Length: 202
Image: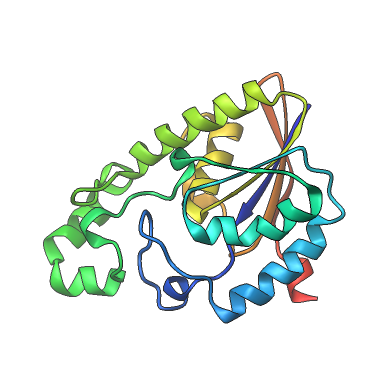
């Protein structure tokens, strides 16, 4: 059995201001720093064999203390990054609705197939992420793997593992600094826990 420990990065400045930050970087906020402290303590009690992050500093910063404590080298994967919002990186959905009404309407109409200008569609990001996760599971079979990534990426991973499709993407709530655990064996995935933030709220 392979176990995936999926961690969303801690709260960032852009998260607080509701700005789209897919491929651009965003600094962890003061609240996020406190989340990291509690997350690190919580993960002390979980055995981990390997740690993957994206190339974004917010994912690396979230688990760097975990990696240090456990003596594990972080493996960075560009393919695990959030969806690329293209030209809309760094702005809010309200900005898009106000300044780019045609794009906003297209976003609503096309749904999963909508591609951000010079960016990705949700389907694009699903294919990218699912291919990478498939490779990681095959390579690290039987191990406990921590993946620290982004909300959209984690939704893609879970949707892929439980259904093989992107269509359940929005059925999963993934909060900042949350932990979701899946057990995978012979291509069959079971959700052990989902969006756990109890260690932060206690």
